[in-house]
Image (tube, rainbow, N blue to C red; front, side, top):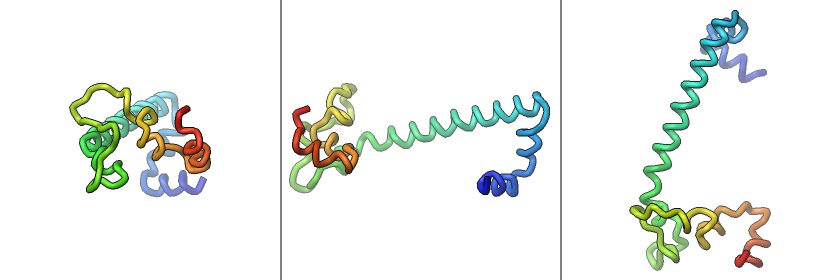
Length: 107
């Protein structure tokens, strides 16, 4: 409730929209939906800029050797990305499961 109070301090009209009549609630819902869409687009844009440099930063020792098998920015296939890539999967594995993962990597 503390966060809600802080939000209302910065935008007191939100209380009227949230607790107002159906038209006001519909207006608030439309605004929130639009905000969610825009936030999703921003995340997608941010992530798409990272694709080109994932291989550079994900390699354990990029000055010595890159990822094996390599990841190419222009490759449209996702067959060896994320948990499907042997080195990236190890990095994405939750820490509480890391020991078991390293003992049974073939799974």
